[in-house]
Length: 312
Image (cartoon, rainbow, N blue to C red; front, side, top):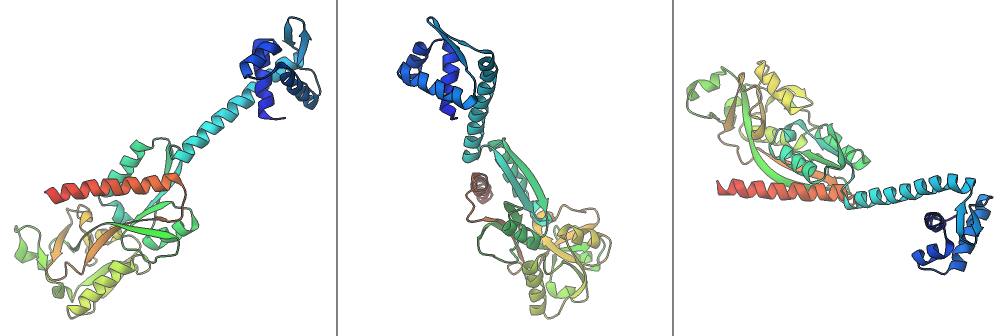
């Protein structure tokens, strides 16, 4: 049984006449009759009672008509869904992000823009550190991910740096280093003045780039930092600084967190060394249109926002 047999049957049933049905289908009447006979043989019962004025559905034919319509409708709907999926209009997309990357205003802009452009795509979200998200990309459980500095660059993954921002020092409110900066805008603190401080940093396996960059900058400033606490998420850094457990450094876009309990400062002598990139990672070999179109939307929105920043 083939789909064309079902279509032939449906037209004959609608016309109630083999000759008119053949004309509608653009074929000769004898071949159409042969195709219907072949369908009846496959089914094991007659679909029509033939008579000089045309053809009437049998009881079995009337029952099969509903099934044939349902099958053809299902095929058409399935083909339409497949076409939408092939164009990227439908499907699923899992977006990963680190907490510090998600804090940047660019990320919600990109996700909002993609959702508006592709409302038929179901989006899932997964939070993790850079190492976890990289592994998830390789495993295929995450399609695209926003992170800071890649911890590794496995084959098959692409890493597109969207922007780079300044790292800021985070001090608890009332810290002695803040006394001479009262009321003078964002404080500027020499890195070497932190030699006796306890540092709170994200674990090395989660963010080795920014972690190691800060340690190297401290060494160049003449001291090895005392790392008192290592945490999984950068947002926890700020909470612990607010609790007075030490000092930390975070990307500038995170400076709104715990603003009533911490003070964000610029580094006086290490601004260029201590920076925080924002990176979009994805499987470079993916043929999924949802991934390709998300990357395109991210690059478009990032370019638009960069242009606005340059005009300020």
